[in-house]
Amino acid sequence: MPAPSRKKYPLALFVGNGVHCVDKGVEWHMLLRNLVAFLHLQQEVDITAKPFPLFYEEIVLAAAAKSKINESEVKRYIASEMDNMTPNEIHHLVAQKSFAEIITTNYDRTLESACGLTGIQWNAGVQSERKYNIFRFNRSGATRIWHIHGDVGAIQSITLGYDHYSGQLQRMRGYIATGTGEAYQKQYPPLIRLLKQQKAVPDESWLQFFFTHEIHMIGFSFDFVEIDLW
Image (cartoon, rainbow, N blue to C red; front, side, top):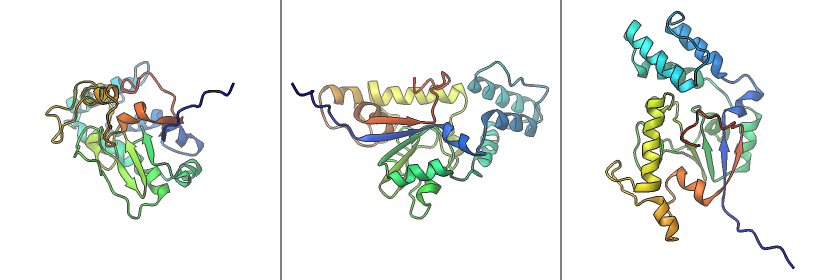
């Protein structure tokens, strides 16, 4: 008796920070130490024994209290450090495979650089977003690159603290479970309703790929900090 055929789904690639480990990429613990030194907060914060988003919140509050430095300046420093990164062999291999959809938690633009910066469309999502990342993507040819935790080219979109993670979760839940309502100019019915009714799903958010695509992951540890993805 022949084995039942397996339904084929479109393929999407999910890229985590681990792809930077093959060369001298940005290591988070060193970036945090450098950030603390840059803000002169060595005596005010302890970088050990706490989740990264909580440590980030502590840095922001300490910087505001000590030096009147706001969160935008903290994010600008982080973005500038990551903006200096260059693609390695893994980024180039990914680019050569010509995936239609690439989802990444990384803020840097090494994937775009590997694809070739000529002709790239930045923040080309159907909805304009300044802070959150439900519809935002960059397009290189036929490839869409979804920076789901933010892009160094839009520093307010970089997701670092629990406050930002919580806001992102709210937008995600709206798109999937309740509909976008008045959160966006173009409103969407709940994704889950469209799936249950077997209706066409708008190809406009990375969230749908977890329901409609086969996702292959590289360089991602699924740390418990990633509360939105869990």
